[in-house]
Length: 429
Image (cartoon, rainbow, N blue to C red; front, side, top):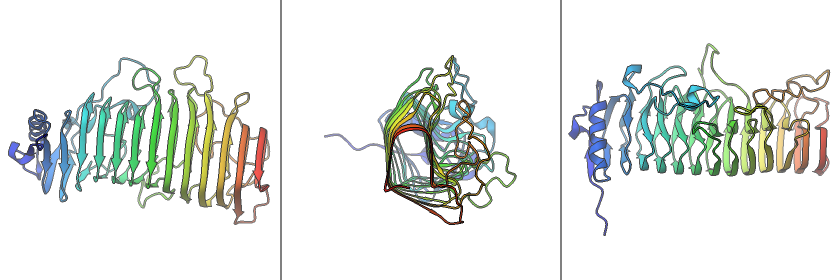
C-alpha cells in the first residue's frame, strides 16, 4: 500500500508570508525538499512575495484559500528570457518559457492546485508568465485564481497529459490559456477574462520543429475577450487535430478599464476563430452548444498562406470542421469561411446556428481582397457582401438549419459566395 505524501509547509523552510520580504529562496527550498519524497508543498494563509521558482517532478503545490503568491515587482527577481538555438518566427511571449513565476521544463507529475491566488501585480502587458511549463507530462492545474498577468497566464509548450480545471483568470493583459504543440489536454470549468485571446491552441516552432497540437477538450468554460474567445492559430506550423469545444459561453465585451491608452489591447472581435496560415493541417474540430455575445464576427474560419519557416509559403488545409447549436447575438459583421485561390477549406458544417447581426459597415464597393499572406483575424477583409455568411474558396460547406436575423435593416444578402462548390443551405438562406 502506498504511503501518504509528506506535507511540507513553506513557512518551515523560512517563508514569512507577509507580502514584504522576498520568499523565493524559502519556497524553492520547500519544493526541493518535497521532491525527495514526491511530497506536497503547502502555502497557508498569507501573502508570499517571490520571483521565479523551479517546479520539480512529482511535487504537488497547494495554495490554500487566503494564500496569495505575489509576484515581485522587480524584473531581476525572475529568470531572464532565454534565447533558443533555432529560429521560431514567433514573438518572445510565445517562445519564452523561462521568464515566469512557476516554471517547469521536462518535469512529470506536476500539480498546482488550491483555492488561493497567483497575483502577478502588473498593470500592463509584457513581463513574466504566472505558469510556464514546457515538455512536461501528467500536469494538473486546478482551483486557482490568476490575476493581473502581463503575459500568457497558463502557458504550455510541448506538454502531454494536462488537466486544467476550475481556474479563474482576471485582469489578464495577454492570453488566458495557451496549449502550444501539446497533446491530451482537458480544460474544464474555467472562467477566463483576458484582453487578448481567452483560450488559444497553437502549433508553433517552439520545439525547433513542427509539432502537432492534438486531442484537446474544452468544456463548460466561460471566455471573455475582445480579441477571440476560442481560437486555433495564428502560429500553425504543426498540425492541429481532434479538438472538441462544448457547452461554453463567449463574450467579446472588453473588461472595464482595459488598456485605456489603447496601446496593446487586441480587439480582433472574433468569437470562434479557426485558422491555418503556416502550412498546418487543421482537421476534426467539433464545436457545440456555444453562446457567443458581443463579438463582431461570431465564426471566422481561415486558410491562409503566411508560411512561417516555409520557403516558399504553402497553404495547409482546414477541413472537417463542425459547429452546431451555436447562438450568437450582437454581431456586427458576417461570419467568414475562406480559403485562398487554388486551396479550398473543405467539409465545413454549421448546424442549428442562429446569428443576430447589425452590420456596421456599408457593402463593399469593389472586390473583397484576398490577403493570402496577411495575419489572420476576424474582420481582416473589411466590408463584406453578405450580412450573415461570406463563403469563399470552399468545398463541401453545409449550412443546416442556419438562421440569420438582421436587426438594423441592412439589405445585402444573408449569404454571399465566391468560388464555392458543393454548398448546401437547408433551408435556403
